[in-house]
Length: 257
Ligand code: NAD
Image (cartoon, rainbow, N blue to C red; front, side, top):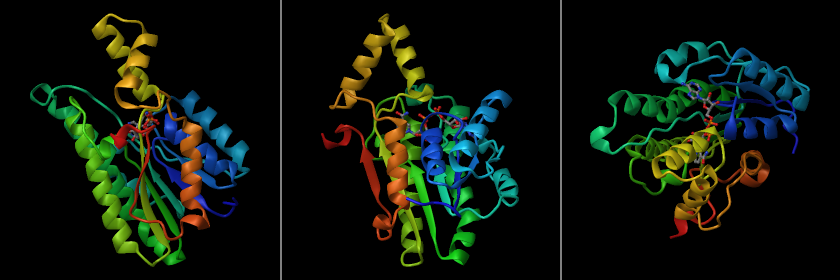
């Protein structure tokens, strides 16, 4: 695939799935605008890596996506974006009656509202150029629920709703909007849940990882960030010109049962 001449913005791309997708897009020649809460050293390493892969200047969009509509101001200063990947996300687990309201607000802001603000701001440019790809990183938790994840499940279900509305509004205009719904992917976000489970149950991290996988993901394997990078590329390819409004599970059978 040749993405030379295209600019991609991937939110939350200093780590995990976002970084995997940013690398896959950069490998095909796209110019990358990356984003995330990273130290200067981490951001510099991501910057150099993406530039080396794409041979294009990378740009660090230093927005904190928990800040709501403030995000709109800094989006206005960015170059035109052809591929928007709404990936940034956080997790918190607790029963709803113990769920801290500030965690609810933060998860809704980062995992859902940020995708509204980026899409709202960047869609007009895609329409002017007659081509665009919007890829929302939802989750198996956009399709089914689990206990102790009220905010995350609500946000991911909401993100699928947003995906469908944008797809309908853009149908036939050269801009597609789809969601990828991963099951377990071994990233810092999931490692935290493995560590918490090991501590709670007094078991090894290895046992906790094994139990976490088998509880939900029948394949018993993690999806890799490289595989999700290939999914993002596929959605940018001509094969997907007429694919829009979909929620694509990449979940080892999680949502099949
Ligand atoms: P991760 O923790 O490795 O990466 C999250 C990224 O989001 C980081 O770059 C982080 O800096 C950024 N981020 C967090 N808060 C931010 C903020 N306020 N402003 C800007 N950036 C912020 O997590 P991940 O596992 O790679 O998750 C990426 C996405 O994939 C999330 O939306 C997550 O819900 C989704 N997802 C992950 C899994 C999984 O198993 N890992 C499964 C399904 C869906």
